[in-house]
Amino acid sequence: MKHRIVVLGAGYAGAYVAGTLARRLSPADTEITVVNAEPDFVQRLRLHQLAAGQEIEAPKLADVFAGTAIRLRVARVTAVDPERQVVAVADADGDVAGELGYDTLLYALGSHVADHGVPGVAEHAFHVTSRPAALRLRERLDSLSGREGGGSVLVVGDGLTGIETATEIAESRPGLSVTLVARGELGAPLSAGARSHLRQACHRLDISVREHTSVEAVEATRALCADGTALAADATV
Image 1 (tube, rainbow, N blue to C red):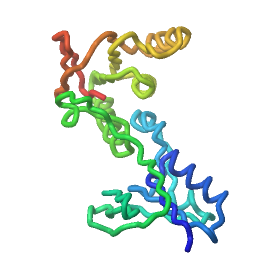
Image 2: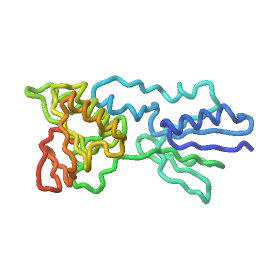
Image 3: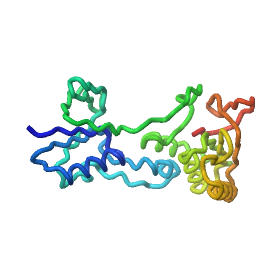
Image 4: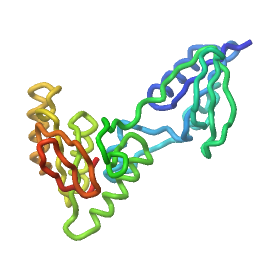
């Protein structure tokens, strides 16, 4: 009997591992199955560019794995039973689609947006952690760019994703007012040289920076801060 390898997730990690295993292991001895909720390969690290308006390639996973012995299962993982060594999956409509048995399981489903318990994030905020979410933000930016006077975009968080999102939006859509909120000093984990470069980039792109600011609630048209101030925003990211 072949050794069954099931890889959950076909992002950068899952697709790379599956491809590497397929090259190094004999299909006569192993069976590799990749489970992913979408049929396309999503370049997650570039979703901020997609949101800002660029066209980012999303090749079909069937084409990515063409020529290999990798089996692709487009479905959503609903449960993992390590005792029975099975994975329960459901199709795109949410209907139960069955179980996949495995001998070796690789979990590479990634992460999801972190709201940190801040009220209003789920209802009012945008994010770029998935392709549908990035396209939703893009649609909102399109509507703001098309109206007289533009609009305001508030990006909360100065990690790499926040920095990339704020600068990409500001550069791609100069008619919008972009503000970047940092809980501490802007780019604190970065080197001194990188922090200096970041400040210069924000200045060049006319990005307003609010340091030492903590957002405690998000509403439809503003974000409420711990110090009692309210930051107006047509779109909070």
